[in-house]
Length: 290
Image (tube, rainbow, N blue to C red):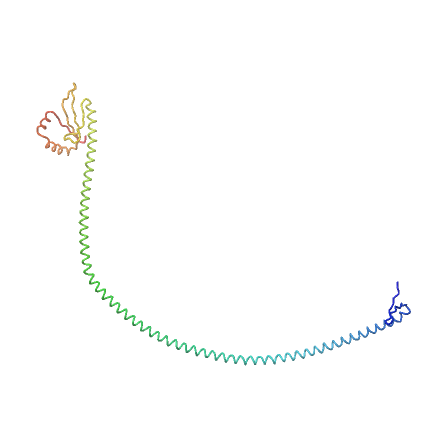
């Protein structure tokens, strides 16, 4: 272990510190350090005391300042309130003056509008009166025109009525003529239909008569009378056992109530010579409804 050394501040010589040499220095240094510590403690205590005193003074000063500030604030508040009240009074007075002026102006405008409204109402009443007079004059004119039109329409309607009656009369006559013509056509069609039906029934009856005669007289000759010739409907030639013609029978298939009229008409149409020959060579037969 090396011994501690110190350096001389003047000659810069290093001097070894032995125990005998260092002991007084260490003691002196210790006492000096302790003295410094004691002084430091006293100084700190003094400073603490001074700080406490300052803090107390500051606290007292603060209290004083707070009181002063509070009082000052109260004074300032009162001053500000008074000033604001004064300003408010001034502003309120100015506002009241402005409102009064505005009310006065509005009252003047209202008076002007009321005057204009009265004039407009008067003009409207005058306009309504003139409109009523105009409507009355127009109605009177319309009535006069309507009377004249009605007077003119009276003759026109009478003329139109006569013309319409004349046209209607012609149309009625035309319709009656058309109806009469149609009735004639209907009657003609009905007559033709009845004739066609009667002719068809007659043909059926002729066929039935031919079949009946052929079945009853298989040896005789049964022939239909050609259409368009006057006489009967079926010609029956009677054949004897030796094959000779013994006589002729003329069959006509008609209704009984119409047969006599038909025979009378046919007899009146035939020549007398032919009628006498028919009496010698022919016989006539009839059947009701075949």
